[in-house]
Length: 171
Image (cartoon, rainbow, N blue to C red; front, side, top):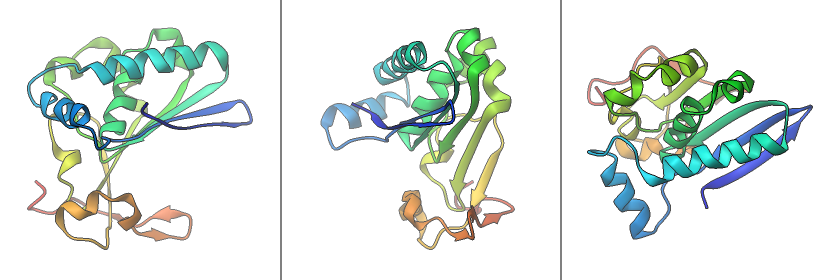
């Protein structure tokens, strides 16, 4: 399963998706993202969010890291309009984007203002495929690909340390 956590706070529900696991199937799916517009776990994520929404009637926050961020965005973008109206925010933590044909769809465009993408300054994974949403660049204490680890993302108080842009190597 790809569910990390489901939390309930004052009728606000949080659904989190994890990134790629250590299985061959998980990595194969990652490679398939490079040439298939939709992969099976994206359909599964949408189905899961729809099922959760039947049991919990409040506002939803949907998030994920890496491939989990992609799953969170996909599930939110292709949920029906009534469910989309309940989604307060979608948080993509250094997850890959999508094929242009996905981004152009009306349901994706409808949720776009509520998608928040966070990437480290030398992001690799979060720069894959297409993104239309703005990203928030976070300072990391690691180098290159190791910045994908969110435990390397720097905090000041209760918030991230933000930078103006990603590095030239990330671009």
